[in-house]
Image (cartoon, rainbow, N blue to C red):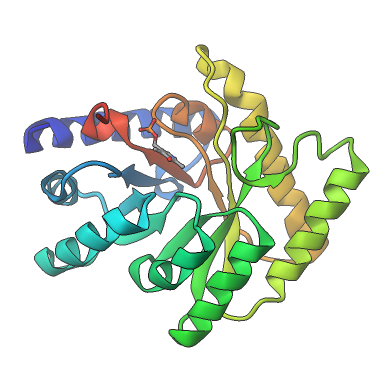
Length: 243
Ligand SMILES: *Cc1c(COP(=O)(O)O)cnc(C)c1O
């Protein structure tokens, strides 16, 4: 993609974000565009930065290790780096200094590893808890399908959340999910609505401030925004198809 095409794509997405916000009576300033730059070169990231994007999502530690320090050196104001992929336990050590927020915390074990490393680095690491709302087996995340009706699912999830909230050096900022792929975007709505409702109940039950709802990708971000997304993770609509 040329820098111009990337800038045009970003401008178009911003128009769509504004339209979705207008529909839902929301302020577009409350929706952060996270540009998912996985498998895309540093030149594409620099083009997106020039077009005004400040948040980037990467899903592999090795790849981020190549790109993040390089980009950070090129620009006046460092972008905010989101780890959006599953964190392998043995990679937690590398994740903590590279990323500003880890979105895909999908087990107590991963949270514990990140907490240990954040203590070592003497930093507070913002995280999101990845929730598997759809129940799809291929999806990572804490199991929460049918959490409204299934007391055992909810109890297990509450137990895990309680454990994670007690860990040092982590700041649990909210929830993240991926909807299944549906050919009709509208079909994702119940998934996003369920995550939004889950966050509300967690806030009430635990008396915590979990402001963020990271949901919505290229195929479904307008619906996610209508259902309350505060972060959308968009790759292909900005940078084109990945090879
Ligand atoms: C790749 C990826 C995205 C972006 O997907 P697109 O369809 O390219 O917008 C968002 N979230 C996660 C977790 C991803 O792995």
